[in-house]
Image (cartoon, rainbow, N blue to C red; front, side, top):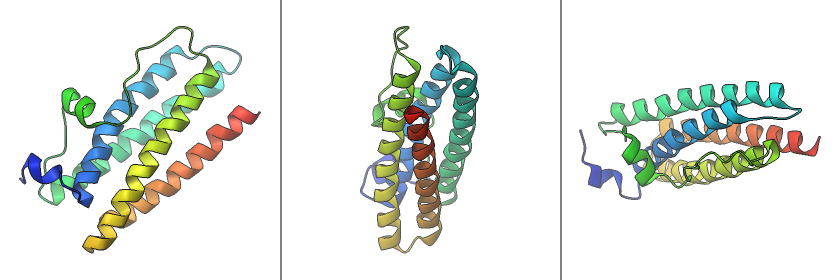
Length: 155
């Protein structure tokens, strides 16, 4: 396995690991919103947040496995996720409205999208078409998710 220092460099693999850390934090936040959402759109958002954390699990796993296939060790502890994530952990606030949860989720997905763009560019520069394709597909999925969440807020 390649060293942690190698994963801190400006490479596509380092960006994949940054995504792993961010997805670890996002996964927890999506569960938190799933459990605590209230109000007239409870049923819609409860189901949507479950869908989002299930998708996050699949992406999280795919990126970590890509790293392993390349000989790297993905971040895999809660402390690593928190240390290397740019998405901030949030302690549940009972005064957080459903719309605020959705807005926070959109912001978190924007963070992931920017990281993925950087990774796709680096992967392209490195000739790593597999990682580049993975990240481009991920960006496409994020765009769709953001669009849907934004449409919910406009409803």
